[in-house]
Image (cartoon, rainbow, N blue to C red; front, side):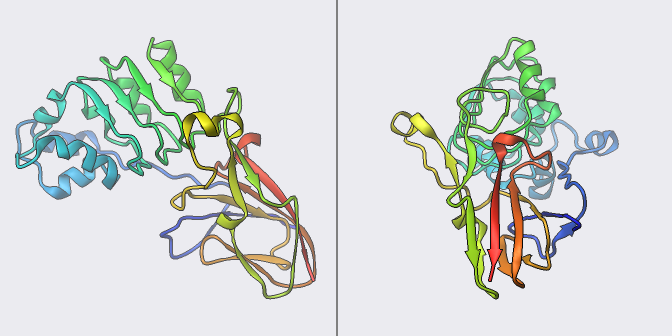
Length: 258
């Protein structure tokens, strides 16, 4: 039977069927960057282009309350950017914060680090604990650049003491026509961290899943993150937060439809 891999986005209107889903950050071309003078007052549209994640953008712009914002002013920010629990997903634009030496992004919804973060020359530390990062490539490069990185409580497979994406059930029986939200099936395995970090086992509702259904004639995906029992049979439902299906970021459920 042919496996199909679905990319799920909470706000998506369609399901993209492909072997791998690649989500690209919004970046400016050299030409676009040159158009924005460093002393030019930035419009809301330009700020959205520079910092596409609304929550990350709010963290930055709140430093300029009742002020006009320019690239020079953004670059002049120094010290620490504290952004814990801000529901940030995308750090695109972080390289404009040239003089920040410490970033705190604990307890957000970040899945990957943009390469541009390596362009920051003054960064000394970054706290990425309690996120959804799976790839250690940029993390390792930061460490090689003598940056202190706290990436605990993520899904990086080669790091110890990381979360694991877990399912409430190893096996599940459904009746034909039954529907079930994936968020009701999944939780983060936090082990001994619960009493120390006061974290939650709940998966963020903003999190985008990668789902593989062994036979979509038996089980189908509807409304972005809901499975529906189609016809009698058995199949494996494979859910991950990364399209590489890293072990720690992936859970399998045996589904039987009656």
